[in-house]
Length: 362
Image 1 (tube, rainbow, N blue to C red):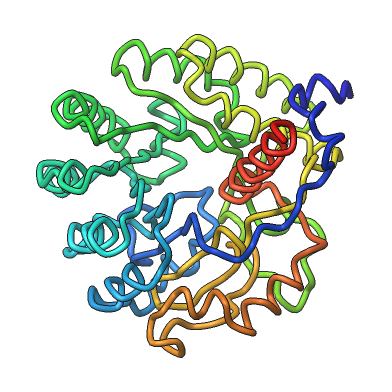
Image 2 (image 1 turned 90 degrees about the vertical axis):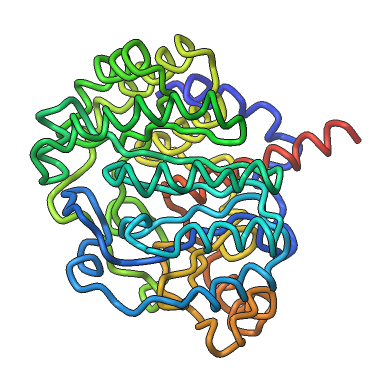
């Protein structure tokens, strides 16, 4: 393995090889608003919750979370399928109005056109001068996508909806849409053809992730706090194919204008981890600048560790919970683990690169 080839940005790491833990202040939150879903995807690591949905917080409770959190960089609203909530628009507005969240991202399967269109046409992002993003999942060409998501006809419906979403980005400058493909053993051979279709026929930007599961995507988490969560019936591509997949994604990114350079650097770290190369930085974000709020109000440092507290015990005051004894204990428990979870690799990469830039500038 040619280490500089995998990590072309690693030269600056000699200044501070692993990075310094930042103060515990939430910047990026993964927010589950429901466990309900209208799909049963083979690669979903939350399928047990989706098969048996739990309780959901009320709008008032979400508003209190938004009010008490520090101004957030990103709230990634997820589930389940977020658009199954009838009050999703009010949840979104609460984070703009009460929190001044810079970007509200909704991770969606892209099926529920009327609800998506309604939220965009409200123009909440423009009203509050922040951003609304939809991350729509497409997991292969038609046959593969429909099989992985166990819903025949979904590929054509979603790609038709994507064309309409791209058109709406031209009318609503604070709205953005991107496709995310979850690369796995079933679809890795068709990512280039899929990217050509999405870019040439629809004009939508295209990002990638690797399928994840607790047992094959995390290392060193203490057994007492590790969360159970693996896909129902899916796995990574063969290890010997990962470098070739990474090269294909680099080419796709260059062809489409380099919009996802940072995501490519993240993928380089992820691939390195699977191939036995440690990341050039610690997990700097989990439980510190980033975390997970589940639909029932429980809070975790990351999706691979169990919840450590419940917002109900803190009057839904996220900042108070984040600075609690329970939160500090969990942060101390996860200083020796690593994982390939995109949200925490990316936020740690951002923090690490910011630290390197400050040191180089100083």
